[in-house]
Length: 310
Image 1 (cartoon, rainbow, N blue to C red):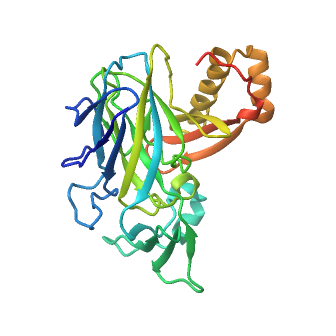
Image 2 (cartoon, rainbow, N blue to C red; image 1 turned 90 degrees about the vertical axis):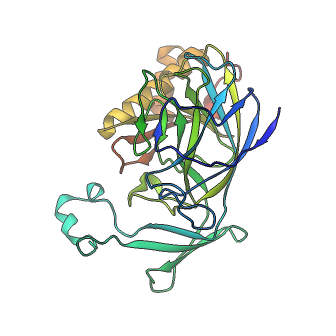
């Protein structure tokens, strides 16, 4: 295993085939940085246009279509004290008659919240707008947008998500999590960005507390393991991510991927797998703001067989 330190000089607002910034062997680790969703770096200097700019892509030797890219999120640490966010819920997450009651800004303006992020204390303090009694929330740093180059020569905006990953905004994508992506092109071409100091489920205001980050990740490769949608693993759960709109289609993708995983790799019969899911599954909402919504299908590892083929 080799540890690489990479300093980005340009960024991408699409997931696509592009010249790699670094070539890695399976098992290599990278230490790098990401800018915030508006392209501002650790010293609050705008170094690239807004739109979830991604660091990368990183080429993995031996990765071919039909393989699985394994992404270990080793560390995600905000690298500045300033974070920002939105102050109004997205109109699509409330009843239509309530939309006019949202705190709309004057025409042509956009209200932001401003946060002081203290990594040592593990807390984000709301600076503006002021609220009675103040507001201090615990940090839970995560990546909102990361994934691989899609198939067919497509260039897919980092505003949305799909089988390639992308802007899923699932607050469970924190340090210590392992994520599995289908490989669509030689080298996989892995991108990452859109750091959040914290974020509620669904990203229902359209942002988390947006911030630039220092990130460490390790990439590995599983040959001839074919996925349809991203999968993930924590110490206690396995999960799948479905990305689509409407929300029920995202749920369908995530549930189908989980059923396939249980049947193909854990050796459960269809009846066993589907009975287990029917009584033990858990769902989380990754994102209900972006063009494609994200639903996470989770299952506790304590219900799984001890042996798998993976």
